[in-house]
Length: 587
Image (cartoon, rainbow, N blue to C red; front, side, top):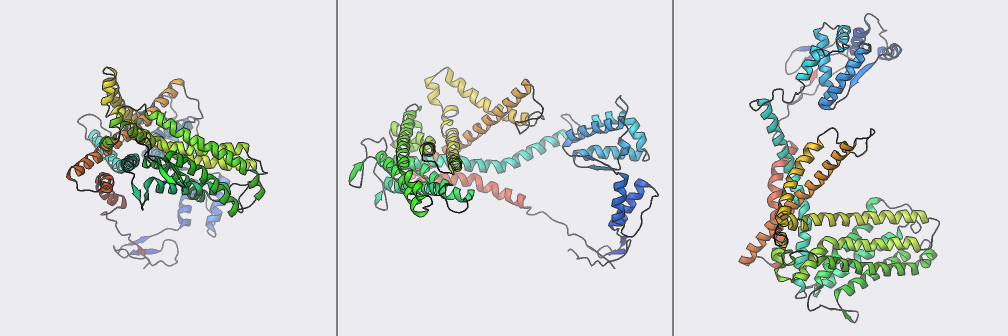
C-alpha cells in the first residue's frame, strides 16, 4: 500500500519522517546540491545565498565549466570512448573537464575511469599521465582482457557460455512467437485468394447464381461500381477541377485507391466466375446481347470510366469548359486503356501455358477443372490484379500527355502520377508476394515435375534451393550484425569494393531467406488446408462454402490463438508484481 506524502515548505535540511520505517532523514534542495557541487569543483570560492541559482549559473558561465559526455552503443562505444580518453590524456586535456556524463556503453568505460580515479585518491592528474603513455598499461590490458562482459568466461564447460546460448535461444523463440503468426496470417492471403478463385471457377461449370442472378454478373456490377467511384474521385480531385482545399491522403486512399483496388481484385474473379476458357464457352444475356464474360468485362470497364468522368463534371463543375474540351480525349484514352486491359489478360493467358504440371497447380480443388482452366486460374491469381491496375495506369499516362492543358497543368501531372503510384504499388507487391507463396513452392518443394523434366538437373536444383534457403538465414543474421553492414545504403566514407560486395551478398541473402521462409509457411498452410478439405469431403459433413472457409480458418487459428494467448500476458505484464512507492511525509 502506498502512502501519499504531506510536504510543506521548509528550510533546507528539514527533517523527514518515513511513515513506514519511522526513521528520520534529510532532504536537499536544488540550491544545496548546486552549492555542494560548486564547492567540490572550485574549492572555497563562495556565492551569495540570495537568488543562489541565478548567481551560480552566471558564475559557472564565466568560469567556462566543461563536461565530457560519452554516448551509448555497447562495447563499440566503450572501445571508442577509451580511445578518446587516451587522446585527451596525451594532449593534457582530460583533467580540464569538470563533469563526466555517460550512458550505456559510455557508462562502461566511464565507470572504469571513475573507479580508477577513486582508487588513486582522486588524483586525476596521475591517471591522466598514466593514460598518456604510448605503451599499453596494465589497466588497459586488463580492460581488454575482460571486455567480453556478457560472457566473461568462455569455453564448453563455462556457465557463462551456456547462459549466453540459452538466452539467445530464448529471445529468438520469443521473437518468433510474434513473427510466425503474423507471417502465417500474411501467407494466408494469397492461398485464400487462390482457393476463392478455384472455388468460383468450379461453380462456373454449372453457371452458379447469386440473388437469382448469375454470379459473374453480380461480381461484375460490384467491380464496375468500384471502378466508377475510383474514376469519379480521381477526376474531381484533380487540382484544375477541385474546389476548396486538397483532400487528405487518407481520404484519397479510401475514396479513390481502395475502390480501384476492389476493381483490380474482382476483375480476375469475374473472369473465372464467367467460365473464362471453359468448354463450351459460357455466354451472358445483358442489354439484349449474349456475349462471353470477357466481352462484358471490357464493355463495363470502358463504361465505368466514362460514367465516372461525367459524374465528376456534374458534381463538381469547376472549369466546366475544360471538362468538355477534354471529353473526346478522355473517351479515346479510355478506349486505349480498355484495349490494354484485354492485352494484359491475353498476356496472362499466354504465360499460363508455360506453367508446369498444370493439373497439379490447384491440388485437390483443381481436380474438377481441366488443365487449361487450372493454369489460367493460377496465373490470374498472381498477375490479374496487377494487369488491371497497369491498364488503368496507361489511362492516366495518356490523358496527361494528350489533354488540353490548364494553368494548373503541372499540378495535375503531379496529382495523377502520385495517385497512379499508390494504386499500382499494392498490386505490384501482391504479384511478387503471390509469386513467392503460390509458384515458388512448385519449384523448390513440390517439384516432382522438375525431376521428371530434368532427371539430372532437377534434383540438384531441389537440393541447392533448400541448402541456400537455410544458409541464407545464417548469412543474413550474422552478416547483418557486422558493423560494416548498416541498414542505410549511404555512407559518408566510400566503402571498398570488397565491403560493397559483402554488403550486397548480405542483402541478397536476406531477401532470399525472407522469400524462402514465406514460401515454406505458405506451402505448409496450403497443404494443411488441402488435407482438411480432403478429410471433410470424404465424410460429406461440410457444405461447399464450409469446405472453402472452415479448413483455412482452422489452420490460422491453430497457429495464431495458442501463441498469442501465451504472448499477450507477457506483453501486458500479467502476473508481474509492482512494489508500491513509499512516500515520505514531513513530520
